[in-house]
Length: 258
Image (cartoon, rainbow, N blue to C red; front, side):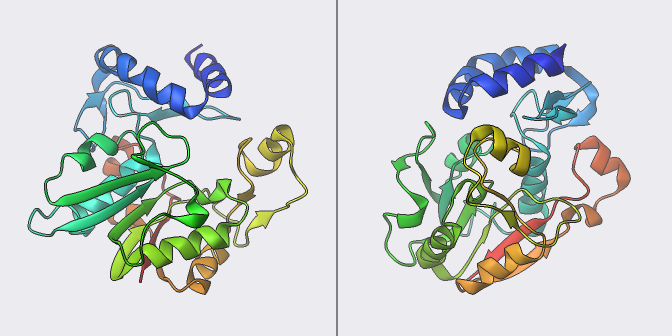
């Protein structure tokens, strides 16, 4: 029943509406699902079960009732905590967050050592609205950037990647997660596929225009100037941690540097 309800909600309401609605729902969900089987590392809350999530196929124990984080969000947070200096209060950072995730937004915003800029076309969490293929920032404006699960929505992703490269300060770094299938090396895209139904069938979601390959996604980033690294974060975790945080063992964290 819960899977059916969430599937209907995700299919009907656009993301900005869901974000606003969730602000009222989260305190209730936190109480309903509290327990000790799963832990959300972002806010350290624990639950007896997580919520299902998915557009075409609902996955069980995926969505955190307290932060609405998914597997990839929790993986990114753990990487930032354990393997980066992002939370170092002595390091001043200018951060660009494209399509800011709700689970990160309030926490990044309150960090005193971060000059935090959010950007998107439609998100209510974005302070600046616009097109990723023509960013309204000068060259080298940011030390760190996050652009997660955005590029698969953009037809001219090379232009978006070039803009991200342009606004990143030399020596800066970022994380650009995209949907990838575990055994797909090459990107699959077809510009002739236009209808929402066909895009959902071919690319997994009605507003996606491609499935990125686990190999040539990095080649695309390198073509615009980035150096890249594919981090298999879960390889550093125990089986107990992977289960506790409800992580995806196949998730790759794409790190970019200029």
